[in-house]
Length: 537
Image (cartoon, rainbow, N blue to C red; front, side, top):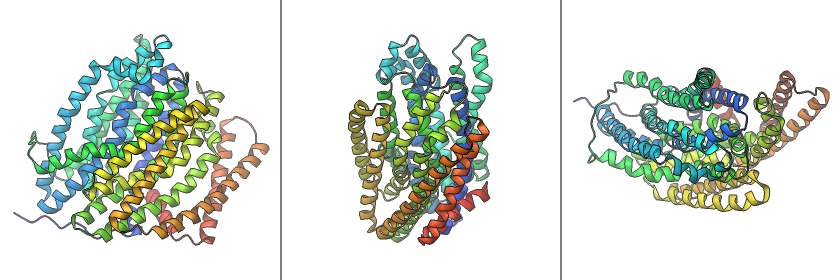
């Protein structure tokens, strides 16, 4: 039998990591743009009313699983095991463990979906009992929950395909596959919502069915790429297989370790159901806007980092892991700090530009912008968690990130219960941001101990310099927008677009100039990332 080809084991340079992340970012950009279009359509059709609140609660649990499986626990548990099997025993053995995981997930998630459908009403009452005060709202939420639950199985299978392709250094197709989720919902809005109305159903049912179609599309898009790599599906399931046991043992802790942000959002949803009509939707719209930059650089950098870290771990090269993780965190800071400042300064104008039309009112804009401003400080925490959690699993350490995640969730619950009493739904966003930053800080601290350092001094210097540059950028953005608002007032789309675009453009020029003056070395890596992303797109 021929020996498997040796893997590329050299730790990636910052430039190489930037190029890999750029490819992922290009694909992710497609998905996020479609996601933005999806949210605009939903806002136009349903605003922040009862139907939108019901859908947001119904899809929160399966979407929680989508975020964890597609961008968290599945990658953290599966990619290191698959990569190790690939490097040590070749593709046939790697395909075998992939097939076994697929079949195991079909069984496990299928049972969970059936149980969820049977107990949909008590589960919904647990999450959104206050909806019973609005006639028909709780019943609609139960119906939508039963429709969207099978999405859990679809997204779990799609995540396995993504993990296999990423392990083979195929990043673009799996990164663009989540776009099918958005395509499915857009199709539902355009085609199925009118059909639902004609059939006498609530129009929002069309969105729920579109969500299922999008989940199936995520699988369909990746299958041809895997077949081209030689993969063939086999109906095999051996619980005694060492690789399968390793993955399943890590998925549980991995889900907890990477779940802090998403569980905190779920907690927000539950608490927001008692804040009146619109609160759940305002928080959801705001979180989606805040999540756009995370998807563009946080997730893409993490996706490009994990296979390299896994290879270094398999070869017992801690120096390679340390250099890769440190480079990834610095690149994230170069992009994340300015994005955070920009979202805070332009929260109102951005929400107005993106959503304020149709059923989405000016009051909805003000409420969503307030939530966005409080969510934004946690952006760095969310991105750092994406990068660091999988590294622990590549090192074979599942306990530390799990305990940190549990502590973060507990902190978030305490903060949110306190803050929601003082500043309403906005306190839920603020509490989540604080918990995310604490979570990231603890993860980085323990990872630094595990690796014997993370180039901490260089990280702190890069952060301090970029914070200064971003603060000056924020001042410039606020000033430019104020001048444009005075000289070109009005709610026309063209006026809104020019004000926001000119403010962002001017701010970026100031940011670039400050980065040069402050001699921020990592700025060039961030530029290479952006160029790679644009080139790949």
